[in-house]
Image (cartoon, rainbow, N blue to C red; front, side, top):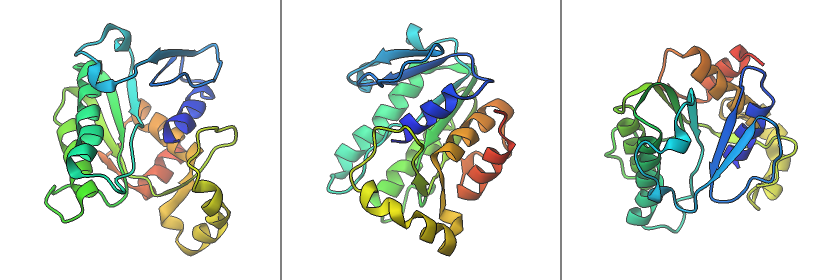
Length: 210
C-alpha cells in the first residue's frame, strides 16, 4: 500500500526523471517515466545488481504485519529481505536510501515487542551501509491516495475514522501524499535527522519541491 502511494507521488513530481518500480508483480500503472523490474523473491537479488544501478534514491516500502508470525519468519521478511535489497542497490555513495519502518520501532533492539526490535535492528544496520544518507521513516496512520488499488481490506472499515483521528490525535496521522512528498524531499535536499517521525514527515512534506 505504501509503495503504491509513494510510486504515484513520484510519477507526479517534476524533479524526478525516471522511476524503477521493483516488485513481485506488475504495478498495473502506465507512465512514460516508469520502468518495472519484476523480482519474485527479493532474497534472490545479488549484490550490485546492474538493473538497480544509476539511481539517486531508493524508497524501500515493502513490509508485512507481524500479527501471528514467529520471530524467525518476521525477521526473514523484514530484516533479511531489506538488507539484501540494500546490498543489491549498493554500495552507492550518491544514493539516498529511505526505509519505511514504523511508529514505535525500538532502536535499542532490546525491548519486549518483537516487531519493534526487528525493525530497530533493520534501521540500525541500514545506517551502517555506504550510502549518501539513510532515513528510517516511522509513519503512523496513513490516509490512502486517490487512485490507489492495493489497499488492505481492513482499511475500508477504519478509513471513515480519519477525520476523527485527525481531530483527536493529529500527531499520528497524515496522508499518503505527504509521506511520498517527504521521502522525495529528504532524498533530494537532506534532513537533519535520520529517524523520521510523523512530525518530521509533515515538515519534509511542506518543504517538498513538486
